Structures are given as C-alpha cells and as structure tokens.
Image 1 (cartoon, rainbow, N blue to C red):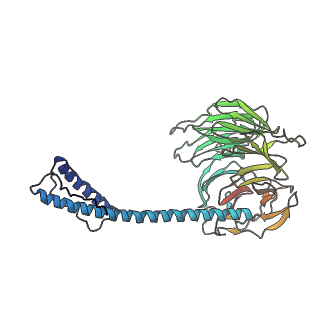
Image 2 (cartoon, rainbow, N blue to C red; image 1 turned 90 degrees about the horizontal axis):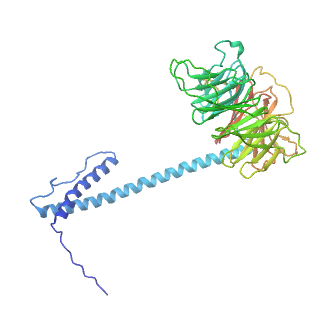
Image 3 (cartoon, rainbow, N blue to C red; image 1 turned 45 degrees about the vertical axis):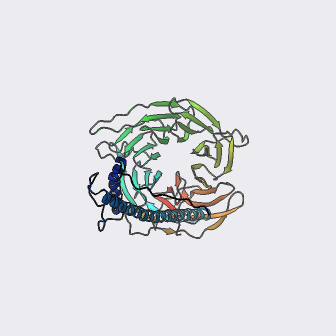
Length: 482
C-alpha cells in the first residue's frame, strides 16, 4: 500500500497572516450578525471575541482564538447552509403549489368554456337608460349609454367610480347623443358619439377641467376610437374620415379648446369598424375592404379585398374587426354574418365560416377560442318591463350569482347540435353570442336572449361580459368551483 506522508507546517507570523486574521474576525462577525438578523433576532449570540486591533501581545493566544473562531465560523456556515437549504426547499414547494393551483384553475375554466357551464350575473348600470357599448379592463369597465352618459364602474366590487357627462350635456341636456365607440385603459378614456363628437378623459386627475372635448369633430357618427402611445388617440367616422388627435392633460384652471388633428386621412369610402396597433390603423369599410393606414404618414399601405377568394359571395360591409398580434391573423365579420381569418404575414385567407344569420357586431379571440356576437333572424327589440334577479351597483347584500337553466339542444345551419343557453333577462330577442373552438366547425355553445343592440363582447380566462340587455351588463363566470 502506498502511503503519502504529510508534514504539518505551522502558521507563519508574517504581515500577510496578521492582516488576514485582522479582517477575518470582522468578516466573521458580520456574517454571524446577518445570520442572527435573518433568524428574527432573539438572544444575541457572541459576535466574536478578542481584541479589535490588528496585533496583540500574545500571538499564540490570538492564534488559538482565531482557530476557535474559524471553527465557529465553519460550524455557523454549515448551520446557515442547512437553514438556507430548508428555506429554499420550502420556497420551491410553495411555488410548485401555486403553479399547480393556477394550472388546475385554468384547466377547470377551459373545461367550463367547452361545456358552456357558467354562472350569470346581471349588473344594473343605469336605472333609466340602455347600455350602448363598453370597454372592460382588468376589474374595471367603462359603460356608455343611449343618452350619452358614461359610467366608470368597478366590476368586482359593483361600485360606481365616476359618472362622465356627455360633451354638450352641461350646456343643453336635450342635445346629447348616444355613445358609439369607447376605449379605456384604466387611466384615460376616449369616447365617440353618434353626433360626431369626441371626448378624452383623465380619470385620475382631480381638477376642475379633467377632460378634452371636440364637439362635432366629424359630420357623421364615430364608428371606432383607439388609444395610442404618446398621449394620442385615433378616431374613425361613418363619413370616411380617420384622424389622430393629441391628448395632453390640461393645466389647472386652463380653458381648453379643441386641438386640430395631427393626421387627417380621407378613407374615400364609409367606415364601419376600426382596430388600431401602435403604428397602424385597420379600418373595415362599407365596400367589403379592409384598409390599413400608417399613423405616422397617413398613407394607405394595404387594401385587402375580403371577397377576392369568394366570387359567389354577396359583397357586404365589414362590421367587426379583431387583430391577433401574436399570430398576425386579422379576423373580420361582415353584415351578412360571415367571419373570415386573414393571414397578414403570409397573405391569403386561412378561415371562413358563417357565424351568425345577421350582421356580426363583435369579434374577440385568444389561443383556444373565438367569440362572436351578432344578430339572429328574430327581429325586434322589446323593453324590459320587470327584470328580477338583477344586481344593482353598491348592493353587496343581494344575490351575487344567478344559476342558468339547463342547457337545451338546438341545431345550427349544419344540423349539428350544440348547447343553447338562455340569458336570465327575459323579453329580448335579436342578438346572440357564440363561442367557437379553433376548428370553427360548430359553436361550443350559444348565449341567446340579447337584443339587436348587442354591440360588444369581451372575455378573459374566467368571465365573459356582453351588452344588448337594456340597462344591464351580463357577466358569465366560467371559473372553477361551479
């Protein structure tokens, strides 16, 4: 057996060793103190012993003290490593539990979406007015009305945050017009009206003048508005005009006057719908085309004829637009109920199906489903005489959710069955919401009972919000626990 002989060499009393012993004591004390603080205090342990100087009269004693301190430092370090390992494992388990819980909730919500299983909540927004469009962001929603009144509401707490007046309501209440377009990000809001007026609100600004107004900015109703980066917004009107306006916050006690647009574009045909990105604006037109404009130059960079591949189809106006930036798919719905998916990256039509029997009013999508809102063949709009089980704002003691009736079976045009869910607000007809899987062969389910005034549908993982029910918003909850 081969044995390697070793020889112990004592510590040299050099200047380097003295400096190392001097600073090593301070490092050890600092590490011990931090370890004590991380454990929540308690009885204060010894943070080192011996003199604080760099030299002492008893060098051998210092060496022994240093050896003891080194042993204590190593033991403390091992204990600290063990505690850190325990805390790290606990943190890993907690993160794993949270991820697993989020995954289970997402999977449960997705299964409820596929089966059409939900709870309904009818939220009364206006006492004596009908809802005319909304924009839902996180837990807050901006709701317009037929009389031009706009309310900013906390959807989860059912609390009214602020009422926004129409542009001319302060001068002549008889001249107000219905809201026709809304955009909202939780901080600012832009509102378009049927008389062509525009209004831009600074929602968190507590001053006398906290909005900008453009009375009669257009000669026709506003069909779309969109907030843009850099305190700007875009607006399109039925008379074929597209404009970009600046929106700088007014100073206190400053008289605001209408600011001229930064960009004024002549679309050349009437516009019916609009969608915007930070650099471009997509406009759905009455002649069945989608025109894409640059917001910096105002030039039309692309004109898409949605009927180019369908020569036998009757041309109809593009009444709804939704753009998916991740896939670069542009979804368009026309006034005849057809929905098409256009690939803006590779070009061409990737999907086409009939979503409704009447005009498509709203389109929204995510990675797994597509939601459309449109008119049905049942005409007429009936007023709500007495709607029971409707929750009012700021009344948390009322019943929070309303169970939906058992899902019946109906047939669509392809004679394939799918769940048919009635809304809890009776006496309305003419509009419906359909939820489609990414196969687009048939709806996952249909929510009927809306009126012809149905104009907006928005959804997230756990809920779907729609209008077209008179003075209320219908909230369908698809979260876990149903």
